[in-house]
Length: 209
Image (cartoon, rainbow, N blue to C red; front, top):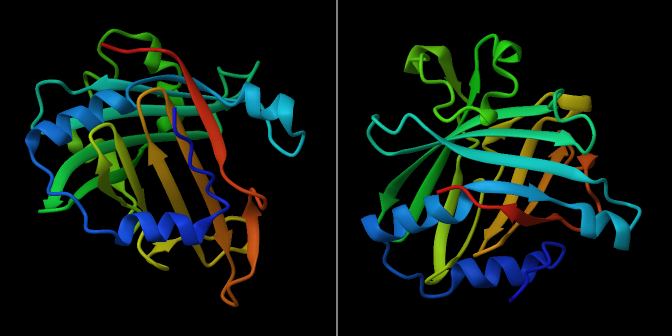
């Protein structure tokens, strides 16, 4: 299993600037299936105390809607009933070489914590229950059949968390691992939140079908 260490941003950008492969509906569905599942950063937290043991859950939702939708919760291990991040992702083809993962928050989202336990999460919600985080989409490119790499675009993702002006996310996704490096920067491009050494390495421990 290959691994990409997101601290090597030069390497990441080199990957995404290679002659990118054309993507189609089969690639879109394949990426969706790769993303589904339960993940843990426990192994990384044991190897390096700079990282926390975090649990990430991405489950299918809105199977009757057009496109591919995922409900996402992220929480500290042992506090999975109190996620610190809740999102909805929508996957679609943006252009010949790019798959876009749009990012949404849920209005009054706390009442839906734990929906990942349900067979059909958020079944009664409608699109007007969501708020898109404009500029925060992850733009993903296929490097190999089961390997996708992407990021937000430059400084487009606004953030005011801990004095930030904008946020960035760098992501790689493969068969049983997802690597993610989320960071916030102030108006002087100084990092004010997020991991500093490299990204989180999430290992999939449960698959979703």
